[in-house]
Amino acid sequence: MIQSRQPAFSFLGNDTGGALSLTFGPTTAFDYDALPKVVETDFAAPGAALSAGPPDVPPFIPPDTSSGTELQTNVILLNLNYTQFAANTPATMSVQAWDWHEVGFTSTHRFLCWERIPINLIDTRLTATGAFGTPYGNIRFTPSPLTGISSPHLLGALEEVSTVGRTIRNLIHSSTAASPATFITDIEE
Image (tube, rainbow, N blue to C red; front, side, top):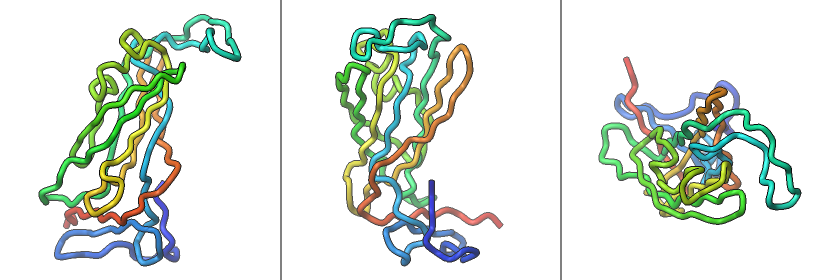
């Protein structure tokens, strides 16, 4: 969620010669509050039978009938530390995933501005039939560098597509970015 500390009906952003500049930071000197530093959520692994569990760790939930199969899990990421029509460097982040037995998987991912990408293209191990090996897990995206002018400021969602439907969930965050960010885009006339 993007929030502002400015009074209601305030004009936010600056017109800088045909471009709109929006700032994000920890004080009222910025248009909006600071963005998330680290974003995370739980997910269903592609190829997973969707059922309760795990049956082999406390509280020992017995297996039930599968309600469907996870076909694809897509991660949607947006880096708001971005300037349209400028030379932007790819956002770099550490990706950490844990299966429901708390076995960890770590990789690095890069993207420019925004993307919608299947989770198993970020890390090929993150499938129910692959090294991940469980139907559900957790994933966390940590920007690199964590601070400074080039630090990515992430927002995101997760799209899960199964044989029984489609679910969209926001990535949640537990802390805010330490460095301010600026998003600059072209103003349409």
